Image 1 (tube, rainbow, N blue to C red):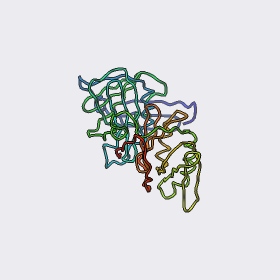
Image 2: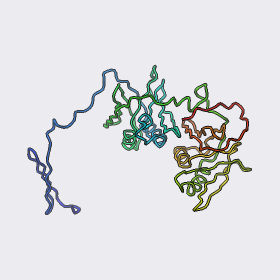
Image 3: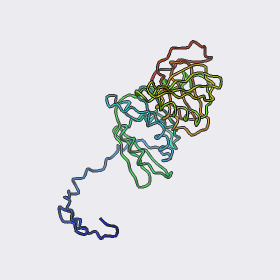
Length: 303
């Protein structure tokens, strides 16, 4: 169809005729009552209010950590964990876990957990408005309803038990991250890992090595066929460790602060990257454990 060309529409009982220039298209129509009716919620459906922008940002931060393996349906979800006036979004795939906090206006006395299938969460993320506005969430035993403006988004709930993310992420008190917080330059580490990952992706392992050095931390990636990259970043670590570079880049992409923190308690223990209320736990790739005592360290629970 050319710009400015007139289009005519003719509707009969069962057809729609679209006519423009020398082109005619006929579409079959269905009756109105054949369209599925809108879902309804139970009368006791819970309700909470929050910022649509906060939900969009938190969902964008954690969604890359969700499993894409359909044989593990509980991990192929985003967990909405609601407690008091705090809503946490959690995603995990068995090799990493990401969690972010959203403050909500209402207070829920009993802790509630809702699992949203990953595909639904991806569609929700694309549908949420670019500009901030008020958003409400209602939920019953089968579905969640997200409302903002004139928009309504329905998502079915998945039944199942999500891993105990608090036990995986925090120490016994439920809110303290393991190990000492070690600040690092987000931009500096991101660039170093990107360069090393060019070589590390060869063979599909994405293996990045992190070793102590005089300036803090040496970041390296190697390919027997292509070559290697090595760069030093200012972050005072005391033990070597290996990580999947792709997982780390996805975690860093969700961070905003110039100097987030790294928490390290052992070469073969989960490594925690955190800023404010956003936390990402990444399982290390195997390495010969270095025996160095760490003050006040507590064993983390594998994802």
